[in-house]
Length: 103
Image (cartoon, rainbow, N blue to C red):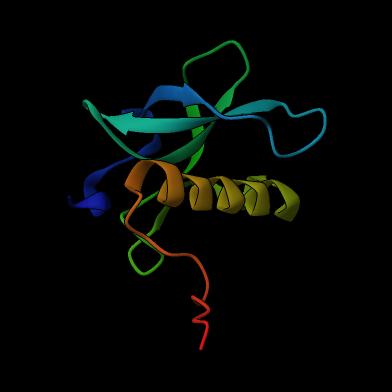
């Protein structure tokens, strides 16, 4: 998928994710483009408007959408953690970190 053509306003809520920070102004969701879940995003509470998202098939091709400068680094780090959850639970074919091999 060409993630360069996608904008925050193109994304829809797919599945709610537990919030990663206390007292958030936004809610964290897996996001979909069309019918395909492609990443994670923040949505203003009680709206369907995406304000910040990370989409991609893995770490190497992830793309940040939205105005990152408008958010505290803790919020962005929480979204990165949620993206790791997306890679593990939705993509399922991405290993995070180095795999330890027993001799």
